[in-house]
Image 1 (cartoon, rainbow, N blue to C red):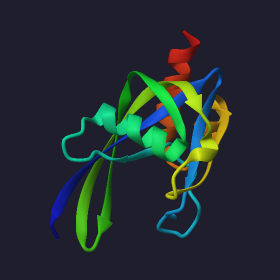
Image 2 (cartoon, helix red, strand yellow):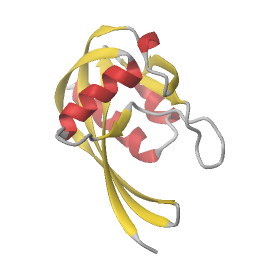
Image 3 (tube, rainbow, N blue to C red):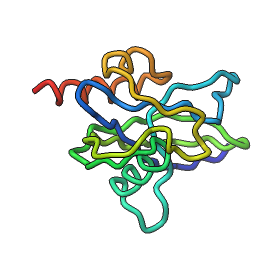
Image 4 (cartoon, helix red, strand yellow):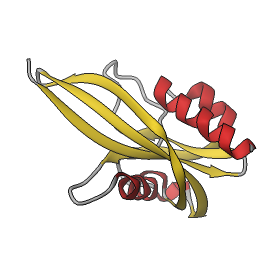
Length: 140
């Protein structure tokens, strides 16, 4: 079985004590809906921070200012018999404007939720950890 590496970037957008979470149209392997942070592939010629900013705008429908890198989430998955190492770099963003209802077609719902709720309810452990890191930074 071959292996490959994919890179993505995403964001934790903060407005007061809230962040934006999304429900992507793509389901988990089990078929269930996923509660996630906005994220996506880094396009050719794009840096990870640029990709994260673009994904926040597209999937969460808002404009946000990058503050700092929160960390990387690493995991493996399989597609078409290929084992893929995935690295997603997450960044902390300050909300600047826009409405989560303006998200793109890859997202069913984008909405504000309390940071503490997102840290408990996001579908993936790595994303819950990124929200906890954001929470620590905004509490300083």
